[in-house]
Image 1 (cartoon, rainbow over the protein chains, first blue to last red):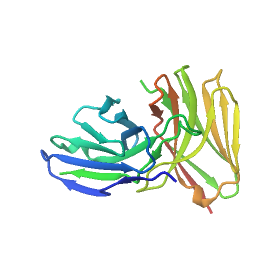
Image 2 (cartoon, each protein chain N blue to C red):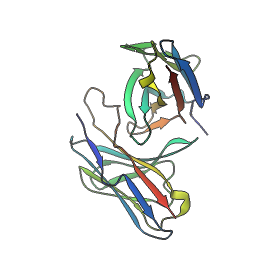
Image 3 (cartoon, each protein chain N blue to C red):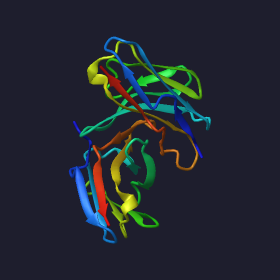
Image 4 (tube, chains in turn orange, blue):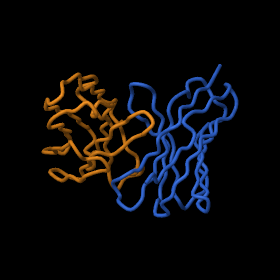
Amino acid sequence: DVKVTQSSRYLVKRTGEKVFLECVQDMDHENMFWYRQDPGLGLRLIYFSYDVKMKEKGDIPEGYSVSREKKERFSLILESASTNQTSMYLCASKGQGIPGANVLTFGAGSRLTVL
Amino acid sequence: DQQVKQNSPSLSVQEGRISILNCDYTNSMFDYFLWYKKYPAEGPTFLISISSIKDKNEDGRFTVFLNKSAKHLSLHIVPSQPGDSAVYFCAARGGSNYKLTFGKGTLLTVNP
């Protein structure tokens, strides 16, 4: 089974802090994604990456950046955390050219609280 | 502009009965649809999918129906079990091969 691991399940940060959320997948998937989930808003795509060092903005990239230096690792960076970035952050990965290639596999999520 | 809509925020059914979760979409370019289930404090897990060239896909207790002319899909769970209680997200793929668009989710509660 594909495993997507998010290093921090719960984080509490202060406004203005720089925050790193790390995600690692173990199935050699080309595509990786960062979503945030908020009540009443569903899952919204922040950024995605289709290859090492490649990234594209999703629907709500403002206030975020990403890094993909290695194929298995995709990091989400909040340069200066704000209270409206308090949310559940979900990392996902997806392969290409295989059965079920449309299926995202998600990590368990990182609950970030910004005070 | 919400391209994938789940208009029912919540649904409550009795154990053993059928659960029907609905999803509407507006983008005719969507060619693949998926349902995910999410328990609290966990990531979403894939449940079932359907290609736009089909109108039905079945997997055990779960069946997804697609009505392209109405731009509507539904997930049927028969029989419903208390362990099915979760938030269900509808998702659609279109245009970019990389991106899924999700609905806001429906909280299903199955009462014993």
